[in-house]
Image (cartoon, rainbow, N blue to C red; front, side, top):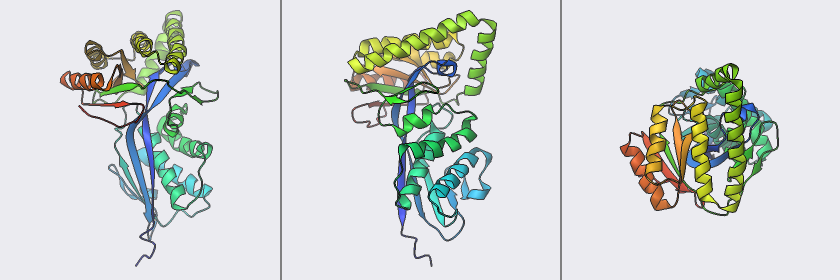
Length: 319
């Protein structure tokens, strides 16, 4: 009988949304990301054998994980190395609300929750810097050369300003943001979308650079709008950003339909979020009631799922 079976520890993480700046961030422009209260929970307990993982996509020993979970395996090993603990004697249960492949940062959220649960289990302090370092090991498996925006935004409880190779800092809003998310139900194709932008850049460098520069200006203005509470202006900036993403070739008919549906339902602004070519879109609402209406209209228009929330309490609602 395992006498340690009652010991357990929980780690949690939220997902994220790119508010403005996706794709242009690859070309040196800034982006703003915000917390999204879809959660991942990891529970670590004592176990009498090799490390056992339990999740919706795989249950088994850590050494036998499928390719898509090798980053998680590496992340666990690095966390235990930092803790000076053997890779043995633990069971890790992963419970995720975050759909994968939608631009919501599911892989980083899972890794953050696991690392937090491990450090809590061994009763060790975990700095944000150490957490970022360990999770980025997992993200390199998932994304090759991750920018770090997913990990940084999911560690933070506030909107963040992200610029590749520069310091990340938080943005404090003076007013509550009412955000609606619409899921197309289709896995976003970030790899193809990034490739499309690169091809367009090679063919029409001046035209594409103009769009990238415009997105950079949008992000800079959006930061001021968030700080000053100018939500009407922020909404207009989101919609401008979406039009430039259309110009870059990363939106599609399904995303455009949901964006226009949100605008007709009274959204202050709307755009795709994440890589595009599937995945999710977001809208900025004027109130929680307006957010509920927009969310309902997105479902009527064919969204696979929709959620809405306010930034002051991060309570998640469904229509």
